[in-house]
Length: 73
Image (tube, rainbow, N blue to C red; front, side, top):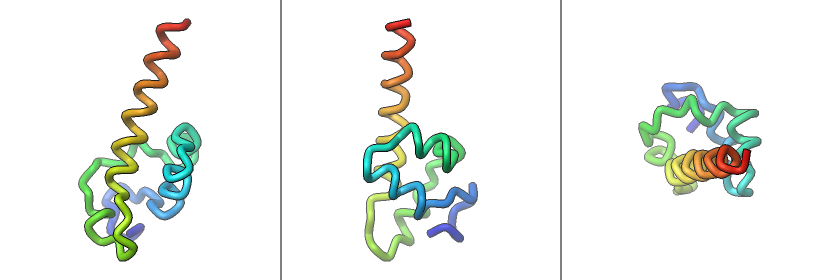
């Protein structure tokens, strides 16, 4: 899946953090936001993992967390 990514996101490492709910770490360590959401990683995943779903969820949760932080500041 890493070779198929047009943004060169290390999908295998990213998914490990996303599965564990470590969204901020994924964004910081593996540049979650460079993902262009093309879905190729999910399409070619031999393990049939919902990679694209994890990425969308992580971006959504991070946005929600940052909005909550901004409201509390």
